[in-house]
Image: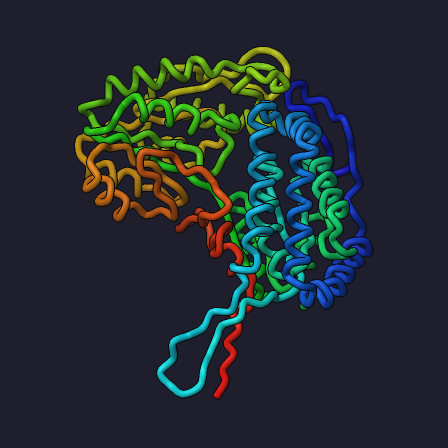
Length: 456
């Protein structure tokens, strides 16, 4: 049975299958990537940037096709899918237009005689292992900076979005990237391990689960390869006494239920000051009720199916565990009748440390609300998590906002906003949320040789 298949999550029907590649095919792709690196690294930056700009243009020209594939293979509502395609285009365009500045030599102010500079240079062929939940965006944020830099890429996409993987490869090819600069590989986990062990591979980037990150991290460490790991998250959304509750609710609901809650930076834990608890809870539940399940091909639908029945069953088990131990369900909480991987917008409170929903990532449309009696209690609860990706703090007190932001153990903090990805801002976390940063100059530097050049 083929590992790579398109399965419509609204029905569970397998609509297309693709064969996993042989070891010989994977190694041939590696040889091509290694050979391409020898010339791509010396190609003028302007020429590399022009390829990226054309990739951005192709995203826009093929928006409908790309979005429809996303809706088919992982169930994202079509309006949200179109938004992701647009974001991906903006990432390629950012690196295309900023390339010369981002790669400019940095002159150092040294104490000794002569001069010194740091040159940002490529390192070689890289492996990317990408997930299904943002199938174009997460590829773009790895691929765009590294192709600009002069690295070459072998990309293993998630097994449930093979048609999107091929569509991405087609855009890179049609944009004029030389043979071997970018290749999609339908590889197995064992083949990825072999690639990481090969001396021609210089680094690996993975976006996925903590389990997958641990495996890839160990392999990279064993073989002395640079690794960037963007893993899970259980982002706190803190609502303090002085918050504008209308703004807080308006941000919290789409921040939790967008993409059916299947986002690392989704606002999974609402931590609410007791003084505004009742008003926020009522507003949140009321707004969440409008996120009813629907056909993801309908532009009006906001909550489509989850990506798979397996994922839906996992979130249902986490909710059932919490309810069996005393959590309160304010909305949703049960698997609907019928076909597909649907799960309703669900709101829980009373979640305690003995429940799975307290520490595990809830990768589906389930919000957990916690009541706290002080700002410091909110910080303590927010930090009581193995994850440390993003966060949001809602308050009209600037001093209080800065106080909380400085004390949160996370990689990203939004003040009166949720974390929204942008091409020019770094993305990443701490603790089990991962290692390294993507996007902006920080993402460009992850797989770069920061080469010192000293002249007397």
